[in-house]
Amino acid sequence: MKGKRGLQYIESPEVAISGVRDIVVLGDPGCTRFSDDSKGVLAQILARKADLFFILGDLAFIDDEEEFREVIDFCNARVQAPVFALRGNHDLFHYSKFLGRATYALVLDRIVCFFLCDATGHFSTEDLDLLERKLIEHKDKNFMILMHIPPSSPHFRWGIKKEEWEKLRGILDPHKERILGIFCGHIHGFYEYDMDGYRVTITAGGGAAMIHAGKEPTQKIYHSLGIELRQDGSITSTVFPVQAETRRKASGRPS
Image (cartoon, rainbow, N blue to C red; front, side, top):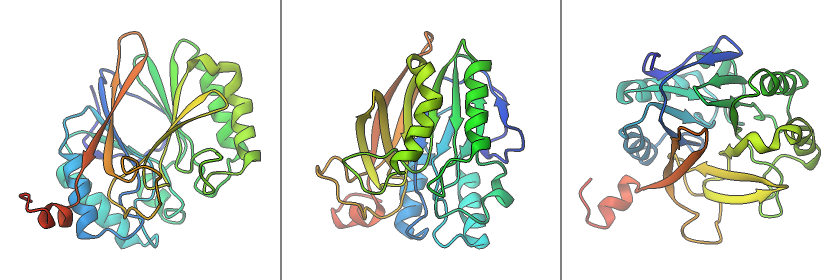
């Protein structure tokens, strides 16, 4: 597998990497400030062994340049694999300076991971056109769709509006059998649900405070998502819970 370790600056609408078998996905490491707890959670996640890491937005809190530098330096000092990111709603102004394009296709051996920016709550026509082209160009591959804000759902009032979801569905529906899942951040914790026949996974336990009330205790957790890429082009996923440093100290566990 090729690629330098650490956060990647994306210039091209398509990036190709071969030999990937394991990916760690996380969301929202910094959007309630990059606190000691946030750093403790993220450090544990970045210590995992994987071929790639994905960060699904909200690296920053107030979208300050120093915040981006701190998070990027923190990641690059710890991770041993390439890290690909997308823009969150807390990353609107300085993301492109530090990380380049917010929408792009990461082409692996049997799967395309499409990073689709919806940080403003809307999809641009240019980005949806790129998605449609890549679905046609790579008709022999399955797709993972990666976004920050999840699709509209009766479960959450924080998702993108119905009309935006319908725009995306218009692109995805002709290729529905090849869409392995839609992976999002934004709502802190872990949630899974079906939306119009698509499996949606929210994985936003990368360090930000658990400010969203999950119905079940298992939803309100710091965690990362491990994705295993299989030879037949399918994937399997595993949730890896992480405990914040203050909780570990309070429970008497070693930090």
